[in-house]
Length: 182
Image 1 (cartoon, one colour):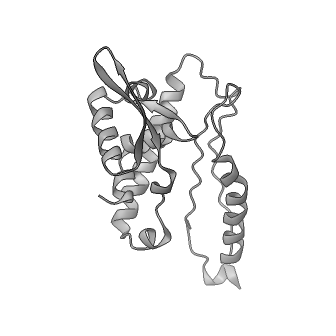
Image 2 (image 1 turned 120 degrees about the vertical axis):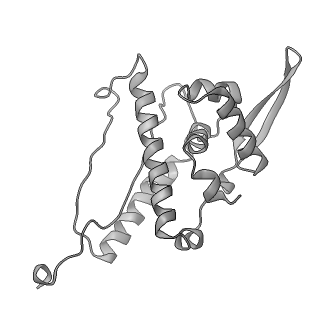
Image 3 (image 1 turned 30 degrees about the horizontal axis):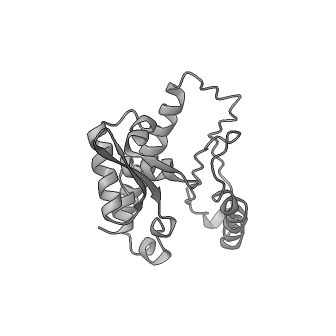
């Protein structure tokens, strides 16, 4: 199973999100983090991610006669390169996008279901902007966003940090007509 196929599943993608930031979590901790999925489903997907090298065992210890494993994310294995993305069909793009949106909705609902959820105080945002960009402007915007976002991906959990899900999505919503460009 290739990386894209592994990540294009809502539960597996939520597991990857939960593991970001250098976290080492047990499957039981992941179950608590993703309460709207069954424990059996979480265990099955953790096993699949570990078997395919997306997760690795960071530590093992005996707990009441069983072996408890702490997993960590292999960042080098969760990359979908440009060639793999370019090889996707339109239906593949639809499936991956639908998975991403399903995960976004599930994560947002899980946030709102917490007793401590305060969207205004937590600076929750879900804005959409329709902007007119030529190819150079789009590429420059993407470069600037990467410049800002990439260093933040290395942040590790601390008591004063909350994990935020950031989901930039770019696609053209219409083509400029000849009359508009003259």
